[in-house]
Length: 283
Ligand code: DGL
Image 1 (cartoon, helix red, strand yellow):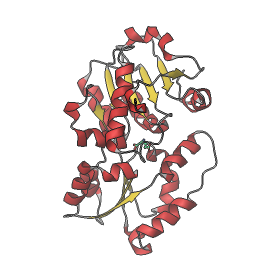
Image 2: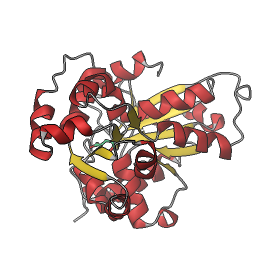
Image 3: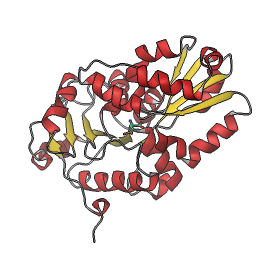
Image 4: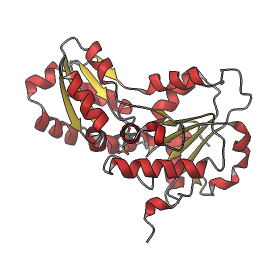
């Protein structure tokens, strides 16, 4: 029997039609940005600061959201299938896996073994240790990210120089999705979770927070109340945007007509999901 992972997922546009109709994108060589949901928008924002007129094709794998509760091997297989399907329709200028959970799973798997060359976002633990004065660091990420061998080894190495507290949270991923959709969000559940991981004294000693999920930079305002002494909020969006710019031919004046298209893997809520993307300039 075929597993769901053996099929190439279909892609839908925000108006509910199939992505196949968007043949015009073939010639536009977009930067493809992939995430399970809205988190990749934090990477899009950094890309747009550097290349304001970049063509961007966003792929939100909402049918498989959240990635954080899946196994790394399944996430790698899923992302590879998505990209197989997409690359029959478009020729990307660059592909960014704008999801820490998928990126670290790809690193574990061996990025060179992936059928597509991708830019990856991985948690910046070394940067956090360098930035921290108190050497007390909270590392927020999905459970999937914290199970990655690459991440486990990075944490072990950083512990020579700092106290690093990994905190697995899927709650924050959901909060970020709700917040961008215009909902009221409460950090109460997250605060309760933090009490299980940290004493009050530890929480107040943290001056650096690693945002190890692309959804989390959307929540910095709320997180400031949870970690009141933190002044370093470390994430990878800027770094990966700079890597894309450095290794492609795109310059801020090399594209005439800008095209920002968002696609989704679940047809039934593509139109609803698209409200968030249209507020961010996507059609
Ligand atoms: N933005 C993804 C990440 O960076 C979301 C995780 C999820 O879907 O659980 O990890």
